Amino acid sequence: MKEKSIELLNKAIADELMAVHQYMYFHFHCDDQGFDLLANLFRKTAIEEMMHVEILAERILFLKGEVEMKVGGEIQHIHEVKNMLDLATKMEESSALDYNNWANECSQNTDSVSKKLFEGLVADEERHFDQYDTEMDNLKKFGENYLALQSIERSKNISGGPKA
Ligand SMILES: [Fe+2]
Ligand SMILES: [Fe+2]
View (cartoon, rainbow, N blue to C red):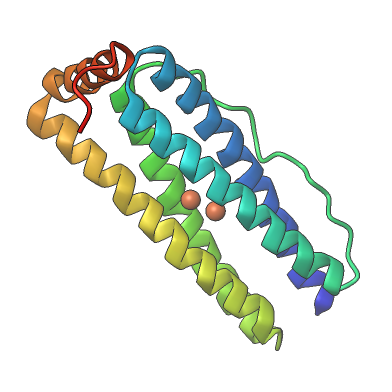
């Protein structure tokens, strides 16, 4: 019973670590291309996923399990913003679905604390999904202008334009 929860919590850590790696990779490439808004969003989200790892690990240790710290898979080397957002929304959608299912499994195994933990993560992953989805909409609506504006904004900041 406890073993099942530990297994699910470790699976979640593997997914979260994978997300940390993928989002930091996206952060580096957005930063490199001058897309500050997106670079910051990926970095901020990667940090939140890392905090999810911490919450999950604490629960595993409380249940006297081993924190495996396996990474869920290889990252994808994507450099194009549309494809980044495409993958990121899919990752968030699938995490939210998994965590919903795993919350139910924990509930069936009479582990209500792990159930609540997974439910809390679902709320965060849905918020992440929404953030990436909004950026995807902006990109569709404004096209390349949306990215160009981010680069122009950075140049203004670097050249130390008029201070507010
Ligand atoms: Fe997460
Ligand atoms: Fe997330």
